[in-house]
Length: 125
Image (cartoon, rainbow, N blue to C red; front, side, top):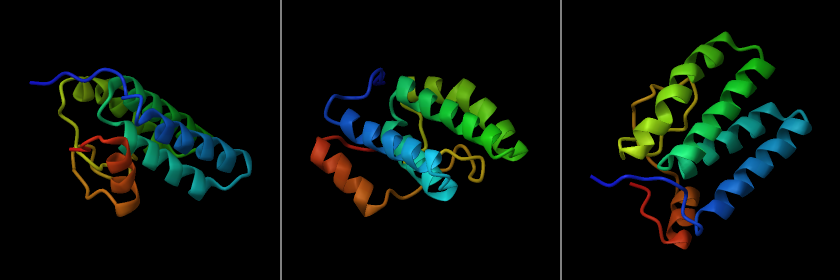
């Protein structure tokens, strides 16, 4: 069994870009676009406990911002268990991380994100 810890340095810039775009879109009131970038950050960072947990923290904050009880309640267990699942390599690859999807269901990774993993030399599975 492989244990994961920190996001690889080759992948981290892509993760940070998504978080930056999230912050920009949030600040501009573009909530749909902001959420989209959080989901992308989740997919990029979900294999690694710190980035995975951080994105769920941001998703929980977003849930409070939009006053979504479903998102808030959905993010609490993800926040608690997501990082642990990452650490032991048991993540649902491609899952966007929101409370609107089953927490353990894998999803296909879109071509644009596949290309990011390829450029970084990282296998997303």
